[in-house]
Image (cartoon, rainbow, N blue to C red; front, side):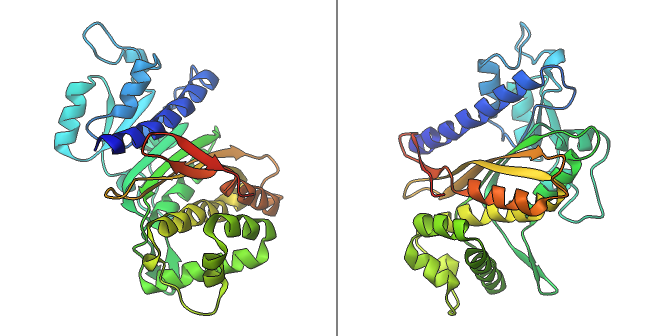
Length: 315
């Protein structure tokens, strides 16, 4: 477990740097700096305290003036009790994130404080789940990615805020046959249509896997080896995010696209994605989309079992 903690600590250090940037840019905002699925141990929040981003009283409670800066989302009652004991004064939303965002549909939206929480400058979805796809009437959707689209729509409301997504998922493919088929078709179409994206994928995924994706035969992505599954998801997720939100004026920059988890531990994938509003983005959505594609693999890499982040540009 210590090796896993070393890897995750490297990821938490990236989250910390993102919060530092927000704290510098928005020192007096009434919008939360950071919304997090911290779990009972709240190690990411403790880092903010250790770095002086959150101040404590003499008895160890988060000072009242800082309590709005961080929101923890947690449903488990025991975890909530531990959070309250460990970090008195921490603002805790008792819910699953999918309930906070009101699901992945377009007919239900968070209101009041829930809307404010979802408009945090940084939303950290550290999920202990794989990327799951769903089929309905022949269409394939990925609920987690639908949440992200809703977050973009919420951040676009007045007053509009640029924001950052930290997303972590299990790096294993658990898709049904219909989702596998859709994914192959989606990736193959984009590999044929976008030469720069195709070039980066050939270097990152390898010529053999790209040939399988663009070929005529079906492919079951769950049969790929551990690294192959992680890499497919590393390509798929930021590609889908860009596709879902580029029409709404967001410039999407994938700043981190990493895998981690040595043999014997769960394979993981994690991203840091920045969403910056472009005033003319809705008029030139294709330009935003193509720009987003260039960033997907510009710094892809791994976190080693020593906690070192090793990246390489594939664009």
